[in-house]
Structure formats: C-alpha cells, structure tokens
Length: 269
Length: 221
Ligand SMILES: Nc1ncnc2c1ncn2[C@@H]1O[C@H](COP(=O)(O)OP(=O)(O)OP(=O)(O)O)[C@@H](O)[C@H]1O
Ligand SMILES: [Mg+2]
Image 1 (cartoon, rainbow over the protein chains, first blue to last red):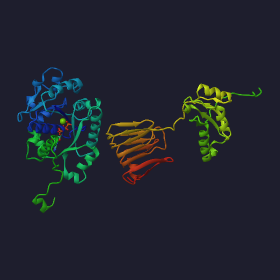
Image 2: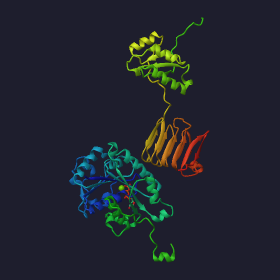
Image 3: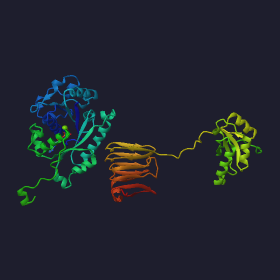
Image 4: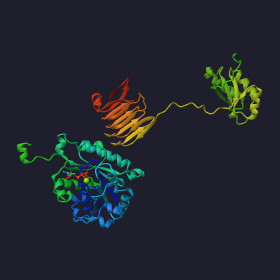
C-alpha cells in the first residue's frame, strides 16, 4: 500500500519544500519508489530545488484537467531512478485543485509508488487543504519560534478535523514533528525555542531536527537536494529523519552547540 | 357568594404498604408483633394499605386480617393487589380497593452534562459544552478556545482561551494543570494573560469568581 505523506506547516518559508525534496530523495535512495508532488500552484519551486525545472512540460494541474496523462507529466530524477517529481503549474490559479481531481491522481499514483510526498503550500487555503486531505502521515515542519509553533498547532487541528481520515472516521493521520532551521546557539541565548519546548507544546512525536545550515542554500542553488550532501550536518540530519520514518530508532544529532575550535578556545568567542 | 360546604380536590399522599405473603394469620401476627416491637412509632396510628398480591390468589379471611391489624393500633385504609374475591371481602369490610400508582414522577435533581474531550485542542479549534461542564484530557493551545456553561477542567496546559459559566453561572470554575492562558473568563468577568501572570501563584490553578472579581488558587497537583 502506498503511503501518502504531507509535508505541511501553516507558516511560510519554514523549509517544507527543502524537506520534501530531501525526504523524497532519501526514501528513493533507500530503494522505495517515490514521487514528490508540488501543491504550491502558482509559486512552484520544488522543481528548482530538485534541479529539474528545465524539464517541466506538463504539470499537476494538466493531469487533473485531463490535458496530459501521468506518464507525460512525471519527471524522472536524474540522480535516482526510483524518484519522480510531479511539478506544479506556474500560471494557473490554485482553485484548480479539486478534491475529486487530486483524489483521482493520487489513486493512480498509489498503484505504482511506495511513497507519495505532498509538498504543501503555506497557509490554510485550498492548496494546503488539498495537500493534507488524503494524507496517511503528516510531517509538520516547524521552526523553533513562537509563530511557527502556533501555526503548526493550527495545522494539527486541521489534520484532525478536515482530512479524509477525520471525515471518514478512519484511524487518524500519523503526525510527526520535523524541527527545521534549528540553531543551538540561538536556543541557548533564548532567542529560539528548544526541542523540548516545541515538543511539549505540540505534543507529537519528533521525527527529526534539521540544523540551520549554509549547505541548504548551497544545495538549493545548485538544484541538488541537501540530503545528497553527506558532508553537511543538514544532509546527515535528513538521512536520520528518513531512517526514523522507516522505523529506525536513532538519537537526535546537532542539537547542542558545536565544540569551539582550537583558535576560538584561545581567543574566546 | 357563600363559601360552599364542600369542595372536591385531588391530592396525593404517601402511604405505607404492608405486604401480606402468608395465608396463615397466626404466622403473620407473630412476625408483625416482632416488627412492631422493633419500631412501634413507625406504624402506630399511621394509615396503612395492605398489599395482598403476595398471596398469589390464595384465600384469606380479610375480616380476621383487619381485626388482627386494628387490634395492634394500625389504621387500615384499603387493600391493593388483591384478587377479585379478596376485593369483594375488603369492600364488605368497608376498605377501599386502591390501585398503586406508577412510580411517583419525582423530578431528579438537575444534573449537568459533562463533555469529555480526550485530545489536545489545537489553535483555531473551539469546543463548547452546552449546559454543562467541560473536561479536557490534553492541552488547550494558543489560539484555541474552550467554552462551557458550567466549569472547565483541563488536565494539561491551558494556553488559549477558557470561558466558563458562559451562560451566566457565577459558580463555575476553571481548573488547569498549567495556567498559561491568553484569557480566562467566568460569567463574563475576565482576565487577560498579564492579569493572570500578576495573580497566578503557581503553575496549576483554580480560577473562580468571588463577588465581582476573579480569584485564583494554586492546586496541590
Ligand atoms: N535547515 C536550513 N538551514 C538554512 N536555511 C534553510 C534551512 N531550511 C530551509 N532553509 C531556507 O529557508 C528558505 C525557505 O525554505 P523552503 O522553500 O524549503 O520553505 P517552504 O516552507 O517550502 O516555503 P513556502 O512556505 O514558501 O513554500 C529557503 O531559502 C531555504 O534555503
Ligand atoms: Mg515551499
């Protein structure tokens, strides 16, 4: 059975697309046939981060409207043969995403794929609601700050009341917390909430903590999901996250301040 | 207009009922004497109805039964649950045949409904317990609202808004394991976060109305 995973947040710019690209790539690298869908109609950028923007011909809305079939619209990743991208349309308006249309496309994809990742747009409007409606698993992407935590709480309420599983009284969506752009230094100085604070407030299991890292920007500028960069802390943290999603029990890394280097120790910080 | 000499009004009375389960009046007399010895004040002079349904249609001498009871200062007003033959005998003795009414429709004391919610209330969600209390096993997030006409009990942190006594009940209370509310109100009197911070002595709290103002006590949780 295909698992439908929504990467959602409420708040914008917290790292949903970065995380969708990284986790989809990680799942595919582990041998699972995976497709990642951009639900951010009109503001597409998943294809940029995946490095396939030049190969977009047809998009998700074309498929919903019957203007193209899935095979025409799916873009095969150039690094990993088990990975596919279903890009969003740059031009159409987001009301193109109807429940029936999205449901039909997901049903078709479920016949072929192990994992279907839905990269949600920010907010709680049509696009975001459609991205979460059919989910089996939700990765609630949150930055360690008050407004992001509050929006995540709001999204958790939506998952519990406005999703297919809620409406049909099925087993609820499995909700996981992914804490992104985590900066131990800023947590220590009190500028940011800690892992414990956020976990306590949202009260859902922690799937991973991704540190704030230069490597993320570098990766997205070159169109390579950051998980490919196994030299970087963010890449390693995403690998851990994928492993946990697949059932492994791993300790959380990169949540304490890095030990100061030799020169810093001598000269202070 | 002169006052009429008589008036007929309906009224209901509570009567003690004596159940006779044995045809053998000597046995009845012996047991009755035993009972009377235990609690004479309970029976003497009190109007009694004799229930004969326990005889299962067996004959008994109603005149003798009446004699047995009156001789012990019991006042019999009628019989109930009797067979047709026994009813006739009772009538001959000047006793009324009484039908037991249905269980008196005593209105039960007004009970409040309690609404129990076993999950966290998330930002943007609202829960309302109409005409009753609200019990939450979980936290109430910032931006969430819980409302009850009665009291609100939160087994978790209250970070959002809680409004108890929404229908005006001034005796309603708000209890939370951790009081971090944006707003609490009872019967319309409210505190915002800053008022709460000034007053709240500990983590947990019970908020209620005293006179016109809210007070908070910490709980030994
Ligand atoms: N761990 C990280 N370290 C540093 N920068 C990051 C990290 N994660 C994300 N970013 C940066 O944050 C910005 C927003 O990321 P991203 O586009 O993934 O967020 P989003 O939640 O998808 O945004 P939107 O709501 O607009 O869709 C990007 O510039 C990205 O490079
Ligand atoms: Mg995005």
